[in-house]
Length: 244
Ligand code: BJW
Image 1 (cartoon, rainbow, N blue to C red):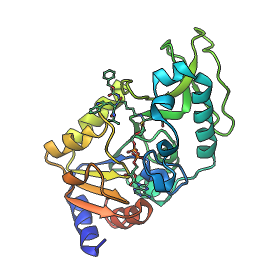
Image 2 (image 1 turned 30 degrees about the horizontal axis):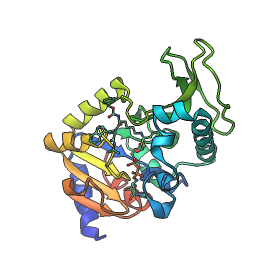
Image 3 (image 1 turned 180 degrees about the horizontal axis):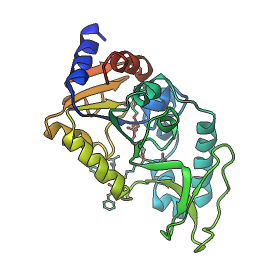
């Protein structure tokens, strides 16, 4: 990556009145949290079948397997710490943060009002939809259990394939992307919709798109500036020098 590209990204961000970050699993990769689709970095779905583990159908077919998989991931996230990329983003109070990540690392780095499009792994909710939701101790997650209110199964408060995204969070993200001047796309393959559609929304609104990823992705065609490398190295150098 050339210094010229870093400089271009800094200039776009310095001139932008409204900046949105849109992140994915690559943001947390340097904290030791597995991504979904990178075979070389232990992508979760190069080892597991997503339709078996991250769908209502999979949960109905084998709830113990699904809860065990989530609890295993919860315990690994419990020991993970925010990395330099989380910290660089969180330090910028002027940025609206939208993430597909279910881990709490961006929040732990100090970012406020993070929009978690795909829910949170540190919460359980009632699968029956009665509204019960409970905070989970990531280090010591509970085994499969029934909802204390309606007896339907409890499940991780994440968004599985075929499920709707939380409408309030989605709406806020959509509004932010349609009004921003610069969208910083960090560590996502941009293959999962409707989240990836935020890049199209920002583009259509005339925003400049800056992409940070270790490799080209489905979003590359939208990039004004594509920075190939580790987010933990690139984001501090791009963001720390830009006046907030
Ligand atoms: C680094 C790095 C470093 C590594 N530095 N970079 C339109 C078209 C086609 C399909 C659909 C569509 N609309 C809907 C669909 C269906 C489906 C979908 O998108 N399927 C596609 C896979 C084809 N979408 C849905 O089902 C969604 N719901 C929905 O549409 O509801 C509407 C509806 C419902 C009912 C009836 C009718 C309509 C829901 C999607 C839910 C996604 N959930 C998951 C699991 C969450 C829970 C869990 O964690 O277990 O969310 S899937 C998984 O993918 C997770 C992620 O948030 C999401 C995105 O992945 P992400 O973050 O991009 O990770 P990776 O691994 O893919 O990429 C990492 C990137 O980082 C790579 O590019 C690396 O290179 C890079 N990287 N290290 C920088 N250090």
